Length: 67
Image (cartoon, rainbow, N blue to C red; front, side):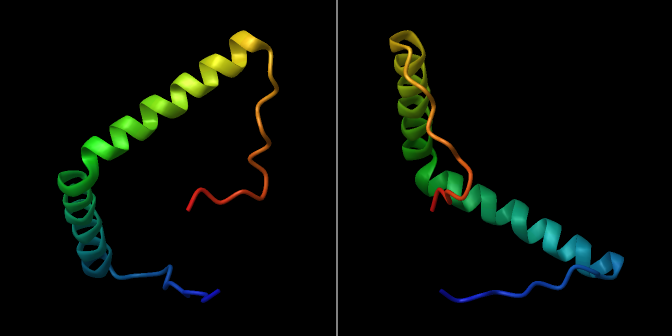
């Protein structure tokens, strides 16, 4: 596993640049994977409803990383 260290204190200009980059990155991901993301979200929601109606306990999310 590789650890990535991020700077957490930026100038206003640097913060604005990062903010704009993340916004563009988010849209690029959505353009390519938006449909897949929606299908995954719907399937997860349906699974939660199924567990709730069947009385199953939700799995613990502590320590789990979704990627």
